[in-house]
Length: 368
Image (tube, rainbow, N blue to C red):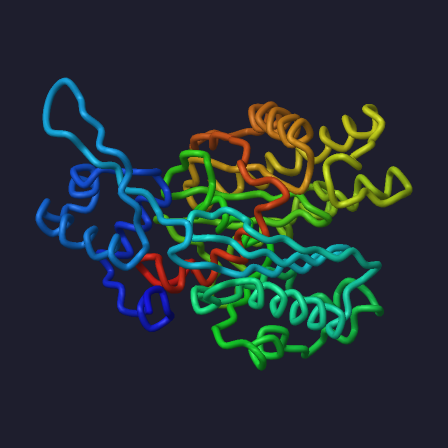
């Protein structure tokens, strides 16, 4: 049967490169694939024919121009493979089924006061079982990716049960496919790399504003997390005043000023304009410092700002960060360009699903 784990384990690096190019650039004709990969037209023809036969690519309608031969754009087949993503947050856990083209097909969530290991495992197991039962061919699921903050026990005494708890191993006990786990801010960065709708260079930093601010770094087209998973931990970056970035540019800081929690959706984002404006101004100063520090260290040309905030708030944060960046001394280096992310609240759950996708379908076999 097509699209079983055994089948996609046999993909060559060239086949993965073709799939990765189309995922990032959109539908491409064979001539463009040959130019981008350096492979011969005949090799591209043979490889893409195999990918179509195996259900990973779809051939679009023939495009006939006034000059030259007709071309056939090739696109990802949405049903080529499926991926599960689990995102664990401060007040919300999410589970999603994502198709080969990056579309969320099924989404479930549960809100809580604080997450316990057993509650998360129960939610995940029940949700996954329900999803598997709904699919005509569950063998198309390549794996489960888990996006979670690290060191959950640092959130307070109520989170002590997470100390030493191996979430990925516990979930893998009952699953017929592999489980991958990564920091939630890193997966948000990975989602922009894999599924993002903004054209980005091979090197960029990613700042994600959620309950706590976090970040990620992409170098040479790959997410970098470092040997101790500290690379790209921009939320922990010290900023002037003896604080860290997450102490200022986090939704939790805004909530403390409001005296209440904000619900996990844009429709419930009801913040007095003066309070939001003050938070944005202070956050922008911290974000600009982090952006310029990342550039000084790694020569990052672009810094992406995204988050679990409404589009207007994200836009205001990006605009204010650009202005703050211009006020910082930058003798000897080029200031990075600040751009808005494209995935907002869906970034971390899509990034979780991108973990098994990258393992089986990216040229290097992993995001980091």
